[in-house]
Length: 337
Image (cartoon, rainbow, N blue to C red; front, side, top):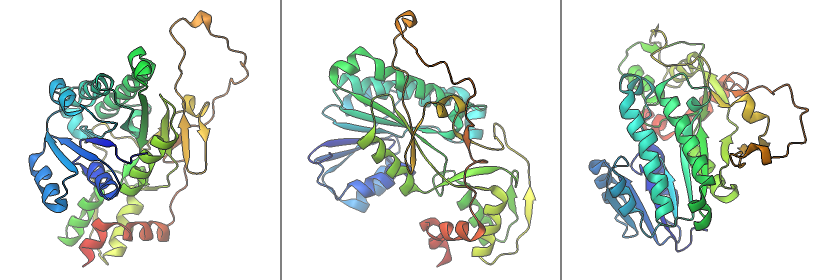
C-alpha cells in the first residue's frame, strides 16, 4: 500500500523512526520525510543512506506551522515524536505536556488539514492506569487520537487514525540494557531500581511490525497491542552478567519517581472488548456520539471484568530464552566484539 506514496515519520531520528526508515527505504516509495528537531541525527542519517527519496525536515511538533507545512502532500504518517523518559517528565511535566499532548494535537490537525490517508500514533504501556506524567500525557494523546477518528473533517477526508501501544522496547533510547552493559564493561556495580519489577520485552523490529500491522488491519480509532513476554529487572541484569561473563555487584537503589512495579498494556475495561488474534489485541474505539439516549445496548450480561493484561500475568521468559533474545540485539552483539 506504500507503493509510490509519500510517507512521513514524525520524530524520525529516534530509535523507532530510524529502525522504520531502514525497513522502508528499499521499498518502492515515492518519498520518505523525516521530521525532527535533531539536525545532528538527521545529518547522520543523510550521510548513511545518501538516498534522494529521503527528505529531511527540521521542525518541532510544538510549532503547528512547521508540522503543517511539512505534511503537505503526505499520504501516510507515523507519529513517534515524544518525551519518553519517565523521570524527566516527572521533573518537567509542562515540557511533556507541550510535546506529548499539544505536539500530538498539532500533528493530528496537520494530518486532517493536509488530507492524509492514515496516521498511526505511538503510545506506551504507561498510558494504562497512569501514575506518572509521561503515562498521563500519553493517555491524553490516545484520547486525542480517538477524538480525531470521530471528527467530521477526518471522516469527510477519509482519514484513518490508529494507536499502537508498546511495552519496553529493548535498546531504544533510554533503555536500561545499554546502561547495564556499560556498567558491566566498566566493571561497575549494576544499579537496579527493584529486582522484582517486571517489564514487557519488545525488540525494535517488534515495534515496527506492530505499526505495520495497524496500518494494514486497523479501523479508524483502533488501538493495537502486541502480545509480549516479560521478565524481572533482576533476571535481566543477571542474564547480561552471564552473557558478558561478569561478576560485578548489584546495587538496589529503589524505584525512581513515577515507576510502577508492573506495567499494563491493556486495562480490564479494554480487555472486555478487545479482539484477540494470534499475536495482537485490537481494541476498537467507542464510536458512539454524545447523544447517549439514542444508543441501543442489548447486552448487560458482563458484570465481571476480565483481568488486565500486564507484565506480571503475561508469559515470563525463562533464563535461556532471555539470554537468546538479548544475544539477538545489535546493541548487545556490538559490545561483545
